[in-house]
Image 1 (spheres, rainbow, N blue to C red):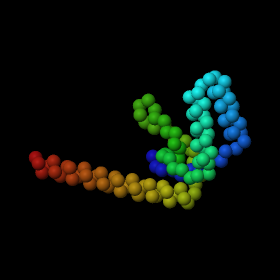
Image 2: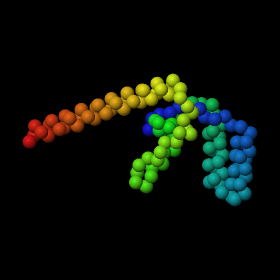
Image 3: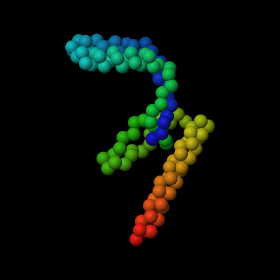
Image 4: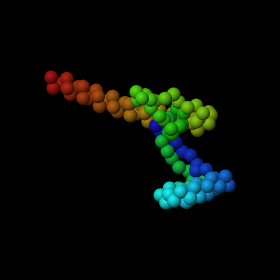
Length: 122
């Protein structure tokens, strides 16, 4: 998982209508907790629309919805989440690879150091 940047979508008339329906449904059911959640989340969306945010996404398919299988392995990458090739994506992938390579080198050095210490102790 790597950090991915996205822009909070602007609210449209259909979004406002859907929110009004949710509020009316929660009010009709007498569900004050749901009413609070719906109104506060929509108000938060109104405040954040158009702002850039970051979230953890898959480095390959840029999906934030990775679901492991029952045995713990990741499901196949969702290619529909990727927008397509771009030079920004190439640069970001190269940077991610460099960071991961540096971490791999660090961990391998630690293992080699531990191995040398354990051999010296014998």
